[in-house]
Image 1: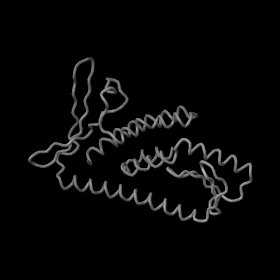
Image 2: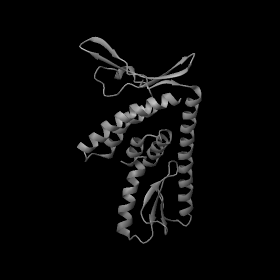
Image 3: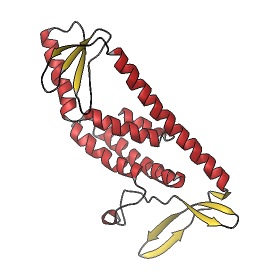
Image 4: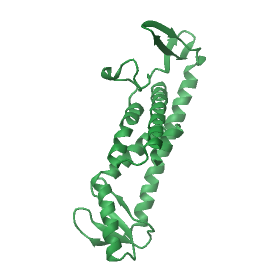
Amino acid sequence: ACVCMLNCTLCASVVLLYIMLFRLVVRRSSRRWCYLLWIPAAFRLLCSRTPFFLRWRWSLLPRADFFHTEAGSAGTLLYGAMNYTAHGDALTHVYPAVSEQVNAALLTALSLVWLLGMAAFALKGVWEYRRLNRSLSGAKLIEGGLYPVYSCPSLTAPFAMGILHKRVHVPDGLNENELSMVTAHEHTHLSRHDPLWKLFAYALKCVHWMNPLVHLACRL
């Protein structure tokens, strides 16, 4: 599992760099197109294999076999390899071994560190969500409908939340015109299911917590 995760996160890093470069070039684009851009990165973070219909010679999706394990009498060997093909002739260049020998104890330790980091990020998310709910304990319903609107004195900025029970929270003191504009904006977020996508992105960040590009992508 640890080796599979390493392959996924390394391949996803290449795709993330592609996407970030494209976002720098095309700054003004709709949110819908932005979401579509992140699909290849999410796929690479979840899957270490390229579908057969995307395996062409000049594919931008990198191969996912940066590392592989091979069991031997001396222990577990971890290799890094990359293949090149030029002018129709199969030319294979194998990089030197990333490590001559990684024994089972070290691989287990790396897996344990990864699992502990993943658990820590998951617990951090649960703690922050519970803290947010506690801060909203004094919220009052000011507008019903499909997406109820609550006013809370402790807030300084409006936001939308909820996956099954979607709702909008706004700070106190907004006049009617401000409230109308704010709720219309937050309703757009809810209609695009932004809270669900954010939860999905946070789950990916928990799994790939050691990859700084994943954290950076979640902020874009």
